[in-house]
Length: 323
Image 1 (tube, helix red, strand yellow):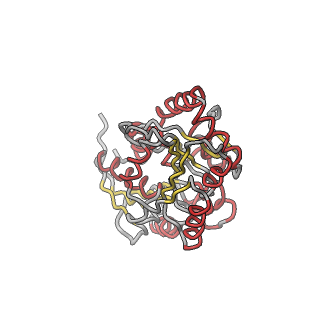
Image 2 (image 1 turned 60 degrees about the vertical axis):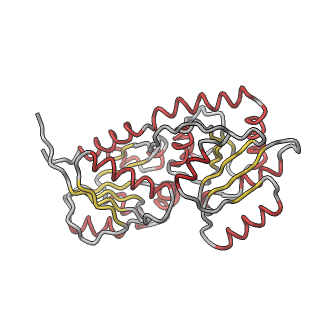
Image 3 (image 1 turned 180 degrees about the horizontal axis):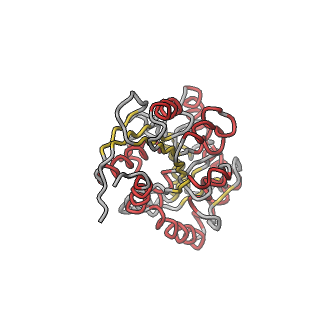
């Protein structure tokens, strides 16, 4: 029987604990999984030279300094780089740092099954798919007087954050839809835009940033989640919605297709608020369409259970464990 030595693993995330986004939640979840497997985890925003047998870095470009320094100091020690949406669908095409990070890594992790298609074929052998996950959430009673559509994500360009708000203007007057947006504005310009839309669109409410617990509670009672991003690496909030039994409408980008499947019925073209409005209306008024979204979501949910994510992560690290 083979016995493994616990490894000292540095997990680099460019987002601190106070930054509530999907990548930060992924870092915390992975650190829990690896500790449960017996490894010693150091979670940090940058590498300070702490003795490590292995490094996992989230985000090729933003974590580049840590990736470069670790590779120079310990070229034979395993280095794993997990790629985000901006990595896959922008930075590796434009940033020399992100491109170098791909070559320095011994393994690359993508978060959905379309991710490998964005990478050069020469990297296929060292690329692994690890779906993110969320624990099952009890379904909370949904409001009966409104059809609540939730948007979860910081207000920044990549998220196309106001597309759902704009879609609300194309809904029928009798629609009961209300758009609730949870997420921090990355600058005052986005905050001003959100407040302006609140004044102009009676169906839209921006709640700013809230705790993760509050967001999950709201998600478990919502009728729909909309993910309207221009680019996505594998939205953690999709995992959470499926865990809560909340159907998703999503922009038709590779990162969302890789999460929800090519045959998922709830896609709309990027930036097309009229098509999104039609899908929202279908979900509100067509029980068969709503049931179809739920059915597809339940099938994809099986890929995103915590025990499967933990197992894939342990298997990845196990490729480098010393017996």
